[in-house]
Length: 235
Image (cartoon, rainbow, N blue to C red; front, top):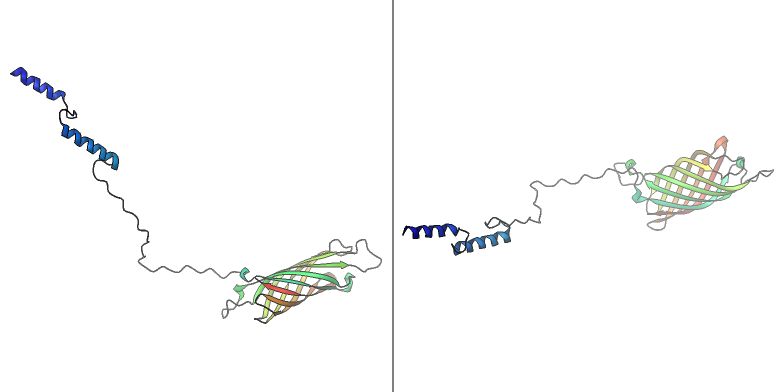
C-alpha cells in the first residue's frame, strides 16, 4: 500500500501545472490569456481606448484682444504713380546747346505719416525719383572734339499736392538732381537743386494728362529748363 501511494505522488510531481495532462482547463485558460495579450498588447487586462481630441477649439474664457494695427508707413507704395513725359530741354547760353528733345520717367508715392490727423488717408506730401534723358549737341565754335551726346539726369526729392481730386492735380516738387553729359567736351557732370510743377487733368480713375515744367540750377549760374507733357498712371 505504501508503495502505491508513493507511486501516485511521484506521478503528480512529474506532471507540473503547465502540463496539459495534469489540468486541461488551466492550459486552455493560459492559452486564451496569451492570445488576448497578443491582440491588445496589454497584460491581460482590457486596454483603455484613448480619447480623441476634440477638433473644435475651446472657447476662451475671456474675449480675444484685437490684433495690433500696423503703424503708419513712411511711404505708401499701394498708391504708386508712374509719370511718363516727353518734351524739350532748354539750356542757358553757357552750355551752347540748342533746345533738345527730352524724355522723363518719374515714380511717385505719398508719405502718409505727414498727413494731418483730420485726414490721415489724404495724399498731401510725397516722395519721387525722376530719370531724365536728353539728346544734346553743342553749337560752340570752333567745333569741339565731341560736340554731341546724351545727357542723363537723376533727381530725388519731395513734393506737395495742392490739389488732388477726381478732376485736377497740382503738385510742386523740390529736390536735388545729378546730371552726366556722356563725355561731351567741356561739360562737367555735377549735382544741383531743382524745383518743378506738375499740373494734370484726370481722364479716368488711373490716367491723368500732365504738363510739367522744371528748373535745374547748375554751377556758375548755368541752368536748364525742362518742359514736358505726358501721362501719369496710378497703380
